[in-house]
Length: 219
Image 1 (spheres, rainbow, N blue to C red):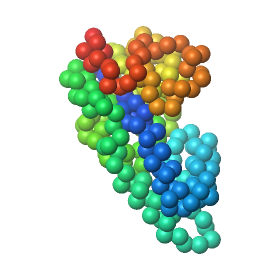
Image 2 (tube, one colour; image 1 turned 120 degrees about the horizontal axis):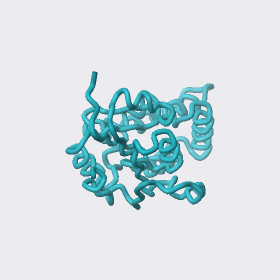
Image 3 (cartoon, rainbow, N blue to C red; image 1 turned 30 degrees about the vertical axis):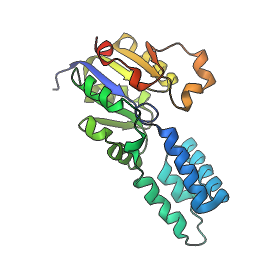
Image 4 (tube, rainbow, N blue to C red; image 1 turned 180 degrees about the vertical axis):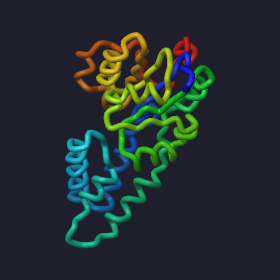
């Protein structure tokens, strides 16, 4: 049986360590350039429909669903290369890798994210985040519903959870209580969600992931 760590650091990926909003803006521009405004609208309609059905972002699945079935169009086929070969390493927030290295000197660092089993791992590999945490990656459909599995994989006396969604931080705090310390970097589009003003504050709030003090979190 794995000996529990004193502390495990759980870090989200999208808009926490990596600027996923920037990626989506690039994708929107690329879609319009390759398949036009109508094709782009078709893609995002499929994306939102799949997100409602699955509970997570499925960029590749949306591409499959949005492709017109009545004719072959290489422009649609080439969009997969844009997604799979996107330079995610260029979208890491300043200080993200340095923070992982500093926290890793204290306890295990784990990427805890929602997503699919193809594109999300690809994003983590392409960004270098997979390598930065030595493959300690957990991907769920709804991570707040998988905390028992998280604890089974990485048992610890305490957890530090860093996530850009205050709603998720509060949901997990309500389950783990004092077992977890929550950290809210106010970056990405969720930082401007009106719901943020109605929710209890996280234990720690910063404007940017690079503002976090690894020594203070470790304490």
